[in-house]
Amino acid sequence: MQKLTAVNLILPVLGEHPVTALDERHPTLAIILPALDAELEERLQSGWWFNEFDTTLYPDPVQEIYLPTDTMAFIPHRGDAIVRGRRLFNPVRGDFKWDGPVRGRTIVRVPFEELPETVARVVTYATLIRAYAADIGVESQTEEWFRKLAEVEGRAEAEHLRHKKYSTAKSPRFRRLRSAMRG
Image 1 (cartoon, one colour):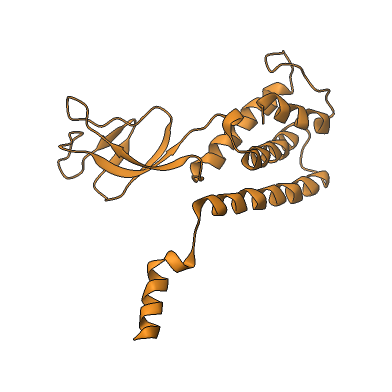
Image 2 (tube, rainbow, N blue to C red; image 1 turned 135 degrees about the horizontal axis):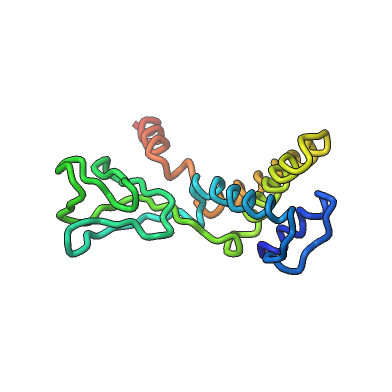
């Protein structure tokens, strides 16, 4: 979904006419665009199938490890790395120097236009609620949008689970239970 499409889904609800470009001087765009960006950041932080990856980060020539610029979070597989700013701190040595690579999960920032449709709709409806509350205030009308938001969140979560291919049969706990039942 394009950002312009999302904005034009929100504007009529706020009693405004759709726009042809996002750079127009429109007072309501000053509310919607920051709200859209804030919702996008909040929704991406938890990690989804499309923005969370196993990563190996390597030290540069001066033995420091910098996070890629689009990184929102880095969770090391072992607890021996701490994110400080854009660099990894080595708590064992007490400095930013590393002798080898560090493996972990990286959550990256994704532009709105590159979101899967289900997640773009979640961000759009959450932005609608946020913008409506900021511009007009909370009314009984927002209840319907909260229901719609819950519906699209459910679809996005279902798609996330399909892509992650979670399975009870693959879990260590299931294997232990199964081997206990055999023995």
